[in-house]
Length: 236
Image 1 (cartoon, rainbow, N blue to C red):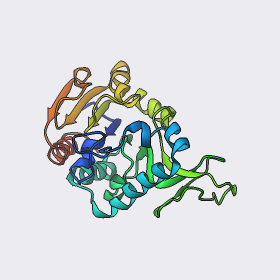
Image 2 (cartoon, rainbow, N blue to C red):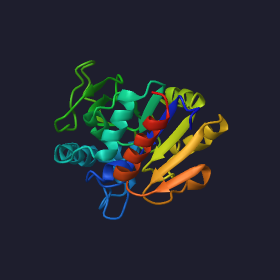
Image 3 (cartoon, helix red, strand yellow):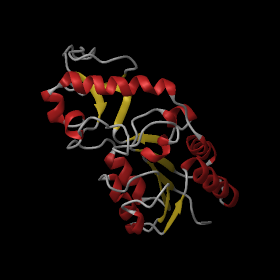
Image 4 (cartoon, rainbow, N blue to C red):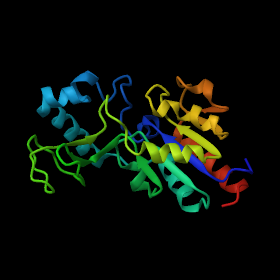
């Protein structure tokens, strides 16, 4: 641990679940009543854009009723105090990391509070409902859609993420299922480059076997404990 300088952290639905955001396809979860194919694919957007827009409008509005938890706050502390390289990559589309104060981070699956122009590719902050046919201010096309990476689309920032993994001394996965690629393969990539690997999760994931160490428990407990320890024994 004393050789750790550069850290990459991956966060998934489990970290936001403790703030009250339902986990991806979990029991009674976010996709309840909707097949993924109906709300999170390019084909769904083409077939029933009103349903897809409404689905994400509801999720966007629900952000006002949740707040960052202790795990988000601890990661923001790591961001402030860690002098080495740090990249926090989230699969989540909520804004809880930002609201906790994290800055060195990327959303690989898009953001609820962003709209994407399917015509020119412009991305812009969007906090209100997004009706079908909304016009892009940049190009004038009526082509704005939720800025969410649908199944079958390429996640954002992959080159930057892979470069960070190649230079990491430690890769930490928090609250992920280990079943959604390409994120599920990050641990193997980090390990191949020689990084230490740590999983913090409520229960063993589909990828637990690839980690050198797995700690089980709530993110709001495990993450602050890990960061307190790291900032105590490591130079920062």
